Length: 142
Image 1 (cartoon, rainbow, N blue to C red):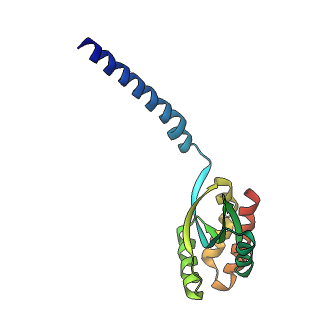
Image 2 (cartoon, rainbow, N blue to C red; image 1 turned 60 degrees about the vertical axis):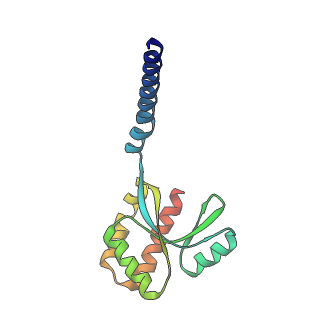
Image 3 (cartoon, helix red, strand yellow; image 1 turned 180 degrees about the vertical axis):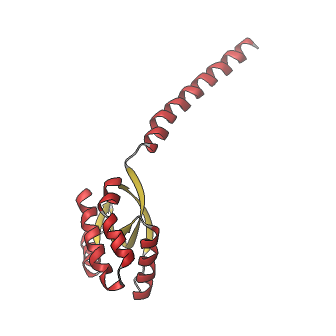
């Protein structure tokens, strides 16, 4: 019985230590991170860079390397109203997309606040120009 109690106490100590480590290294770090989730309008994912660049060029997008995959994004937004406007716009012009959540530095959010506000107040004639400017700012942070 004494041996069983010792084993149980050791297991509790090891489990408590592991939980303490995980909480301090993972949970606290995630809460203080400068990263934020945003929505990226992805129109393709390719194993070949040239194919991705061709699609990006045709659609005023950018190519983002993700390991062995090259993703083509045409818009990266954080504001819900702006996201909804872009969904409606892309559906109207028949551009198929996948809305992918990606992690960006909070600096990106700060850098594109003006453009997102402009996007919300603009007509669809200017969306492409605004998105190009936002994508340039994203590329600067890569």
